Length: 289
Image (tube, rainbow, N blue to C red; front, top):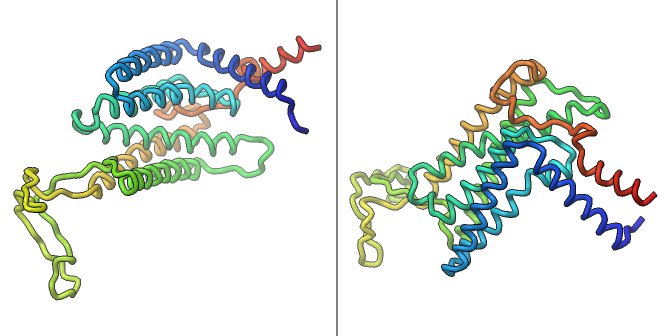
């Protein structure tokens, strides 16, 4: 049955009301959310006055992303623990505002590495939670072992990491960005340099400079195009995913009774007194009657 325009407006109003209640539910995540939102707004205004419209776009994107944890909780009727919600909010701010707008990816050593490690951990938490919630659904008949839950979390996290590297490669290839940061190396080993075409590796060591179109790059070595950065990102994503998967295994094995690092990062189904969307819908229907 097709919904009327009035019904759609009412549903949107219920959703906004539920999101506002969700934001105020936990004091810690509430403080972090509004502190980060205020900072982003100040930075957005500054970027607009300076004419940095690309940075302003990142600020607007960050503002929208800050609401995502609350939107997910309301729409999917799940409860995100405050540690997970705060970690996601800080990750968004660190990636979009500090990383892109304030150029931390360039000026702060290993900033990108730190975020990819955290991303591996958080993505594993999401994958673990998705399977765990399905596994606890009484309507489903399968029962997964703790090892399989941990394995699914690990594979989910690594898949997200690979898809992100595909995105970076695509952006660099089609839009001429530099998301896959280049690395200066002083030696290369390649069969492409073998004049006999016999698949023999030719080593060029002690590279101190590279000349392109008659001019020195002045980098002190050969410029690797992205591959080292990509593999490093995937490796630290692997570490983050592995850490959560191991702790998630013991969490699932103890059925949540044994305290591990996964304890504060596993969502649960909302109870009736915390399901703000259904409460808003019920309240509206009672008023209409």
